[in-house]
Amino acid sequence: MGIYKAEAIVLRTRKYSEADQLVTLFSRQRGKIPAIAKGVRKVKSRRRGGVQPFTHGAFVLYEGRSLDHITQGDVIDAFPALTADLDRLAYASYITELVDGLVEEGQQNEKVFLLLLTTLHLMTTEDPEILTRVFEMRLTNFLGYCPELDSCVNCGGELGTAVRFSPELGGVLCGRCLSHDPMAARLTPATLAVMKQLLKMDLRRLGVLKVNQGIRSELEKLLNRYLDLRLERRLRSRDFVITVKETGSFSDVVVNVEGERCDEH
Ligand SMILES: [Zn+2]
Image (cartoon, rainbow, N blue to C red; front, side, top):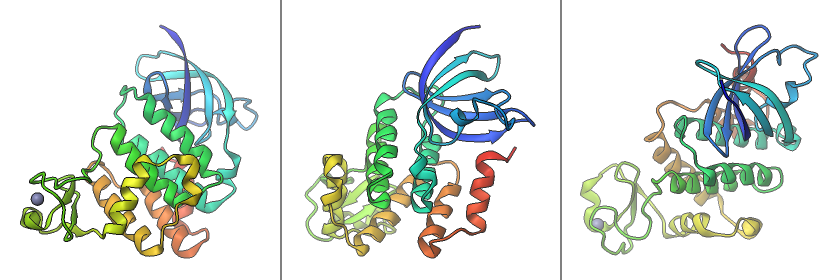
């Protein structure tokens, strides 16, 4: 059985047995790898730090019959700022769960890897909500289903003023084609302009992008619906984001997400 190295980010950890942990890695070289880390749940384990959520590390694995085994994990960056701030923790949990939910096992995608890594770095300093919207837009783009934003997704024609967004059809609808998706949501020109900017802007300039509350809410609603159609399960971390936004504090939901991250079978 082969031994291999992988530069990876820890997407998710779960209890496997008293001493062992199931770890989902997202690697630059092989995409998503479900693996087992033996002995790391022991309090004294030196490798414990390498298999915490969000950790960017250099891992050594060997191929097992069903699951690969992590034998070594050197931490490159553990992003302590993310776990110290509830807001950032919620959004970071959401984007890693999104990658876990949308990327198939064995689907290698270096662009997605670098997007996740860059976003985790920026998440320690930038506006986490806007950064998350950038992440969602670019992730769909790199996975091949970016919403159509430039011309009507149904007729290909110019958009005009009465623009709607259809998650089902995969993009914007012009006024003439509204009947093709009566459920399509209204999309204001300002929100459409921000969506395009999120896709192409230089991330180092993210701080200068000012987005008002109305546009933030519209973006969140539209992109959540768009992604829900492509996900096979409900993301628990989205509830975490909502709770933190509404209450700004810990709650039962947070406890559940935390529990799921380390103690659930
Ligand atoms: Zn049309």
